Image (cartoon, rainbow, N blue to C red; front, side):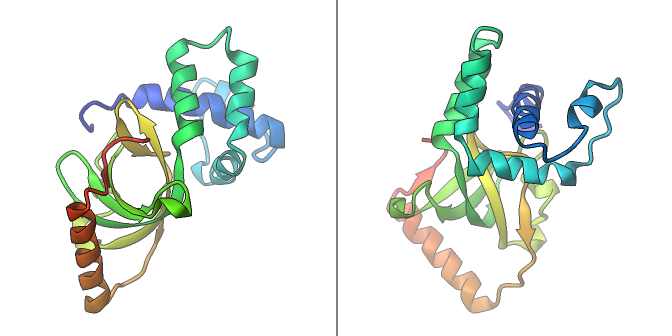
Length: 190
């Protein structure tokens, strides 16, 4: 488990907001019934469209907060509002794995922000367990979120299996070096 990350807390929040989005848009019929069962068996692939709807319409978080501000712990509300205001949805190049994080390279929240290196932690396991070192660099679509003083992804990494040639890999290394020299590294969002 990555240091400083409480995966149970993440999934508690995630399993509050995703069913809310699903109820509003009826994307995964029966999701609430599945979650309320004693041993829920969730088809994770069917959650991706629910997750996509959330990040296409982040104002749904504010709607959830407005409806549940009085019956939801302040820490959950604060975390959700942090996600709403600071999520970064993009395509990234995963460059390298370190002990506590993996280095992602990609654009910031807005195109005008330019490119950054992001230190991204896994939620319950290191990212390297899903994307082995030998496969790097790897292109992936992800939503980065602020969480407990770190950057995580929203539990879904959509990996594009591309075999990068030596010239592109060299360019990635050069870009990463330039970004480090320009101090364009983010270990927290915002």
